[in-house]
Image 1: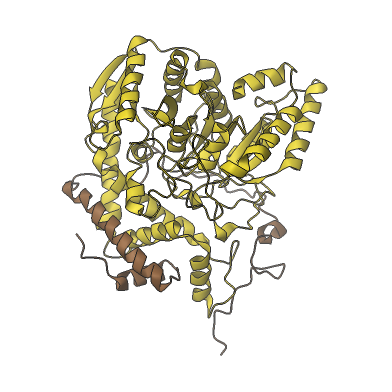
Image 2: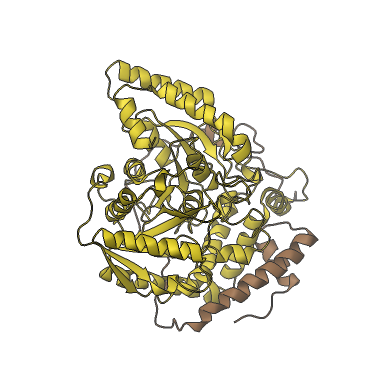
Length: 99
Length: 479
């Protein structure tokens, strides 16, 4: 199924996952994730070509509700845990270059 | 004294909620420096709540079914104004502005919320050693783990610091610590209990459930927290049986299934002997023991870790240092702020699972890993559907061994994952499961019996468990 996991691949995955890892973590995770991926190869013993995937056990489809206005969190409460806010909005670093 | 006995005493006016709450707080003060089950307690709020319940009772007003009895909650359930950390640095200072569905129900039933318990960070782990804040120690032997991830909730009940508690179970996180700590723990059918306000780990597997010292108390607590909640789209809208009433009725013609895949190499001899003795107990009660097969058992761990990690990688994307949680002090730009905040805020096991899930979902690997796991999940569910045509409950060990030692597995993630072999399939299949005490090892550690049932057969499960409990005295043993 898969070639051995390389440190480069782990680096790429860490970037996709938005995780800044130390070099020591990269080395450790390359080994440990490699072991786990090796283990899950076990599933290839099974022919599942005729099996429908099961994302969910509950026998329910989309759940809709009436399109009516309901109270939501007050702004103060919604902002109460923000690492940075100006009292009205969540504040993040500048995203667009000035031009 | 069990929770239901205390409820009865409270209702008869033989003891007040304030008295019971103070006893619980004293027990925590006396024992928790050693056990470390609690991440936080809220003595003032708990006593105030207890007082108001006592006053209601005194004034002759109706009091809820939980009667002013204290309860502990795993610290991944939101309580308005009470810090909810998930035992993670990233949520170290998070104070939710709303109550979880189960918390609303507990408050409405007049439970006293006494504190939040330790867990493996974001419920990822099997020993409660992955907490960013502390390691919980087994009340039976502090050199051993309490299991996990709901280890704090299990230990708090085992040490009699609280009469009962709630945990969450994604791959065994209620049942395995219950087994390791010698208490009753139950994972309901997926959809039975609202997940609204439970910090998500793996949404298609997570389910909240009770810990107690006996089956009847677990039945009462389950009855209170069950029911439909429109804010959880997977919550199932069907009536909640009165579990606390039916639990005392024995089952006639009970068929107890055992799977031959559960009694193989690697199973501790004392655990195997305890389970076999438990089957003899059932036989002596008139039950028939049926041997059957769950042919896809050996694929459950691989299936689980791919699905759970994939869902976790998606769920935990919300922790980005913007809306709540830790934000790094130093970063170059927005993306770097996300990565640095998450790199600093998450512990090693959480990072491993996010990485595994990201990999399994990424382009080129999705079919081979995630989709493959979803297909095997269906095969595992079919095994159980077939099994429950031949039996009412399935009996098995909770784990291959009694509680392992602190430090024994924590540096070997794959070995830790493999320790979940007996519990994990129930989450993949969405079926209810329960752990109850069925023995003690020669070193004095509890051994747990797992019972599983078909979806929404909680009544059957509890009644079968109560039959066993009535015929044995394992549940009366204390650390």
